[in-house]
Amino acid sequence: MSDVSASIESLTRVFAPSAGGLLLGRMGTWAPGVASALIMAWLVVFTWRRLILRPDAPLPPRNGDPVSLPRPPTESATSVSPS
Image (cartoon, rainbow, N blue to C red; front, side, top):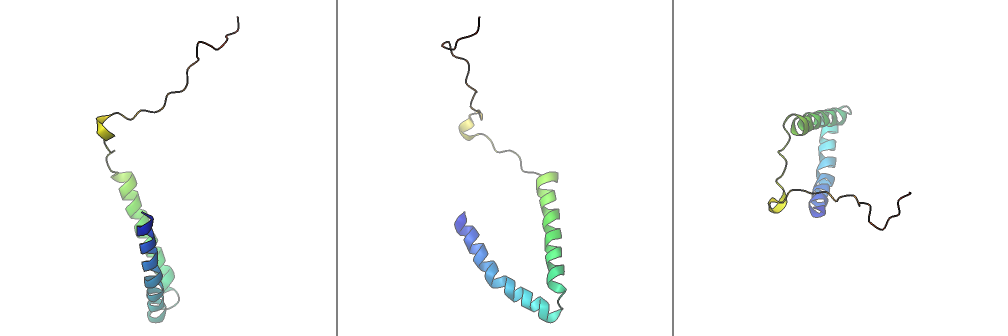
């Protein structure tokens, strides 16, 4: 997974300065801020829909076994109880 992350990061280091320069040159100093706000607004809506409104169904347990959590230790017969 880190290879995919590194690839995307490298791609953004090439694309972002070009897009920023284009926005600054064609539209003005306000354009990168507005573009960032639009991207963030889209991400908020996407995340809200994906996680809150229509989340994925839970994955089935592996090998058909139910997921079991470790049980807390019980008192053993060697513990001394007060009399």
